[in-house]
Image (tube, rainbow, N blue to C red):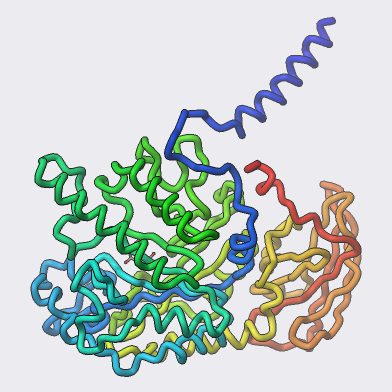
Length: 479
Ligand code: FHN
């Protein structure tokens, strides 16, 4: 009896203990997540398979390239207006000089395609408020520059023609609009001003979706102000309006907060909107960090420069670094988005062109390991990363072991490897049975021939007898 009671107690601890760990709190929310778990529709499935994207930060800040009167702004170039050394008037009149005569949207799109990007996120308007499309709600647009032509349209057309999906970046912060406030309005005057800003923001978003119906998503930014967070109900309604206007529209977690001011994940811990947008210049350490959500990682080439800065300081990432980040992101079910900051004339800088070429060369051989693949439940090893699709396990090798043996651990009852070959030349390579470990997992070695020489990360495709179970515990945890 005592024993039975003890077993029951243990069982309930186990059941309720585990539940307590995974159970959400349940705060009644009207403006939190409107869905539990990831979207399953075709548009989102397409987004999920992208693997690699391009980010482009372009605007009038590119004219300055991080310099004002020979003084170098140490911050991110697109923030130069906020620098105390930068006269606001001078900045706000820069657009009168914006004439990017070298801009060639088709060439940019071709280069992105060659790099292997499946989508682009393009800055329609950054925090300075300058619009690269001829918005009818402000004069601070491309239409009033010497260049005059609609840049957003050229980007949408050129990238769409290359088969690259377009997502439009839109900053909620708008330093140019008179009604913009960062703090919650306290006076009647501020409230009236902020209402005009809200209407303006809504109008611009409707305008973008109407003018460029081909786009797939809106990538919001600058939504951290208290004033915007305080508008949870209104922003939520706006989101619904935008989704109704543009079925399939993809919006990340930076757009709105819940009614308690919680951003990205609501007060119940559920993801707000379609994917987690918190991974900026940073990658998760483990799947637990991701809560089973769709996510993207946006990455700069130097430490923290998005717009064009003529002097990149500090460490500048190499294609090797960026490829490893991309593979790591994809191996954890994320998309990797690499930023480009063209100059004021519309040239992609040579360092970025070189990276695009190097990444593209690698992708030409190995993109099968990136597109449409996902996280593998096969335990990660120090030599690199696994991605998987059905019965295909892609071994993406970044740290070649000195003994040339790539260890693989298949848990008890797991799939059996049958064939391994290099993606670059389809050359088969040996799989050795390496016994079992203490966990009773089957160990294998995939052998890299000693004669194999390379200065690049490489991929070996390991085919297994049956499909590797794709649904990971982390996906299931969300449902
Ligand atoms: O302030 C911006 C920054 O300039 C850049 O646009 C990045 C891109 O994700 N977003 C903001 C910082 O989070």
